[in-house]
Image (cartoon, rainbow, N blue to C red; front, side, top):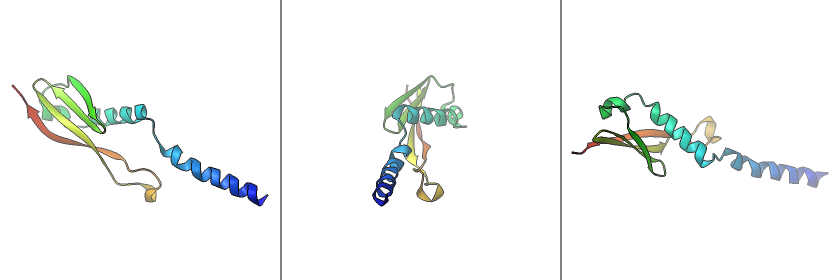
Length: 99
């Protein structure tokens, strides 16, 4: 009986970290939603958004006309005493306009 309790407890402990993992497609969808929710993104570009590209892990490029802004997702603070993974927060890099 005691051994069965120990095995059950060990199995439950191993399942907790896996439950916190988010599939890549869900993570990317969340990043896109955060990009669309950025209030001053269109104002900084000066035109409506024409294209959003994923450049790399946690790095997106938003283009409008001749201008583009790279958006990097950085780790925010962990919530609930570290029980949940830290939230990724979007940060705009400077605007670059070409010819």
